[in-house]
Length: 99
Image (tube, rainbow, N blue to C red; front, side, top):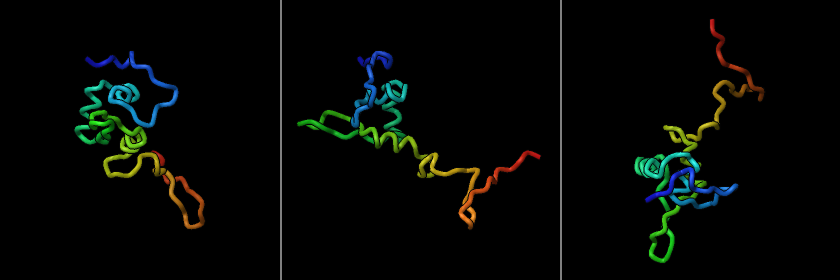
């Protein structure tokens, strides 16, 4: 039986490698939803640790990187959709006014 999300204590700083339950709690989803996200590719596959390679952990940096990408593979938030560079190096607001 898995723990409830609310019952999983999180450190003030998330560790570099998280378990299924810790990762799910950090994203505020159930462990089964975490599994579904891994299966469909929204989250990276786990890394295996331990003598028998049975300890599964996710590197949080990889999880964060995967979640920050949009459907095209570029990082969300890297671009500024309402600004562009001009030849002189200044930015100009190109957002259109409602007419």
